[in-house]
Length: 554
Image 1 (tube, rainbow, N blue to C red):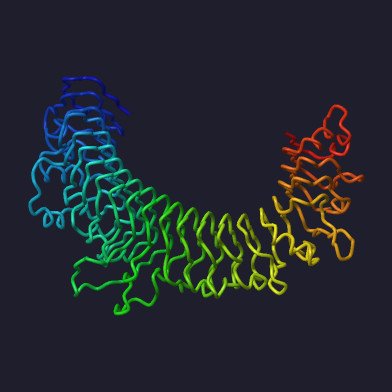
Image 2: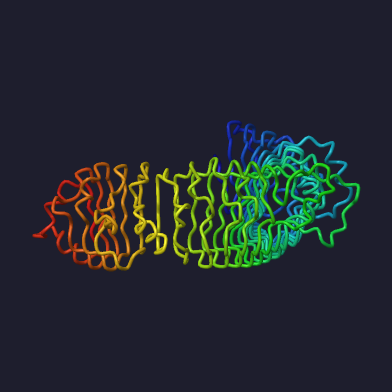
C-alpha cells in the first residue's frame, strides 16, 4: 500500500512498483502523469481524498491503472463535478467493480457536460461496475443516465444527498438487485420506469428518512421485488397510488413477488396499497390487495394508519407484526384462510376493536401476541382450536372473561398473562388452573389479581391448591400487591430452573420445605420483605438458597 498526502505539486511515475495493490492520495492539489505509458501495474484499489478534480481531468485512469477495480473519491470540497465528459467517466469506470463517492458537498453532477443521447453509447459499452455508492454529496441534484445504465451494476446506495430531487427516468440495469436510499430529503418520487420494467431483477429496495416522498410507486411495485423496507419517511401516505396517474393503457401489469414488507415510523401513512392497485381486469392478477407471494408483513409506528388491506387471502403469508398503529380500527378479513401463518403480533393499537369474524388459522400458527390494545372487546374466536399454538402473550386491555367453551389451547409451551384480571379469574374460578397445560414450560403472570395472597391459588370449589404443570422450567410472578406467600406445591416442580419474583411488596413467606432443588437461577426484585429474609448475613431463608448457582436480589 502507498499513501501520498498533503503534496500540493507532485509528479509521479510508478512503473517501478509493479506489485502495488492499493494507493491513497490525500490533500494533493495537482497530480500529473509524466507520460501516457506510466502505469501502476497490479494496483486494484485507489482512494482519492481532498484532491482536485485535476486528478481525473488529466485523462482517464484506465491506461495508467489497467487493473483498477475499486475507486473511492472523498472530501473534494470545492468542485462541482468530477469528470469533464461522459466519455471520460465511462472509460474510468468501465474496468471498476466498486465506485464510492463521499463527502463532496458541492458536486452537482458526476460530469460537467449536459447529457445528450448517452443511452445508445452505453448499450455498446462493456462495463464491470457492480457497486455504486454516493454519500454526503449535499449539492448533487441529478445523476447522469449513464450511472443507472451500467450493464453489470448489482447494488446502489445513495445516502445523505439532500438536494437530489429525482433519478433519471430510465429502466434499471438488468442485473441490479439491491437499492438503498437514505436521508435524501428532497427526493419526491422514484422513476416509474423502475416499477414497470418487466425485465428488472430488483429484489431489495430500502428507503429510509426520505421526508418528501409521499408514495413509492405510481401504479405498481417492481414485479421482481422480494423485500421492501420503508423507515422514517414522514410524509409517505401509501405505497402505491393510482388515482390521478395517467398510465399507458397498453402497458402490461404484473403482480409483485414481494415476500417481506417492513414499514416503520411513517406517521402520515393512511393505507398500505390503494384499493385499485390490483384491478380485477388485469389478467395476471389472482390475489387481493397484498401480493400472493408475501411471506412477512411488518407495520410499525404508523399512528395515522386506519387499514392495511380489505382482505387477506395470501396463502404464503407466514408472519404478521403490527405495532404502534394507534388509529388502526380493523384487521383484514380472511385471516383464518392464511394456511401458512405461523406468527401474529398486534401491539399498541389502541383503537382496534375486534379480530375478524372467522378467527385465526389453526394449521400452523405457533405464536400469538396481543399487547395493550385497550379497546379490544374480545380475544379471537376459537382459540381452543389452535392446536399448533405454542406461545401466547396477552397484556393489558379490558378483555372479558373466557367463555366456558372457548378457553385457551392446552398445548402451549409459553403463556404470558399481564393485567387481564377477567381472563385470570375465569381460569381460576372455573377450576381450569394451569395443570391442563401439560406441555407448558414458561409461565409469566403479571398484575392479574390484586386480591391474591398465596400462589398457586386454591380451587374455591374443592378447597385444594390448583397444581402447576410438572413440565414448567421458568416461572415469573410479577406485580401482585397483596401476595404474601408461595405455597408448598412449588417444591414439587422438579423441572423448574428459573424463578422470578418482582413487584410483590408484601411477599414474606417461602414454603417450609424451601424452593425446588432443580433451580439454577433466582431473581427477586422490589420485594422488600422477602429480600430482608434472604440476606446472606443472618437472613431466615439464606440457607434455602445456597444450592442455587445464580441468585440476584435487589
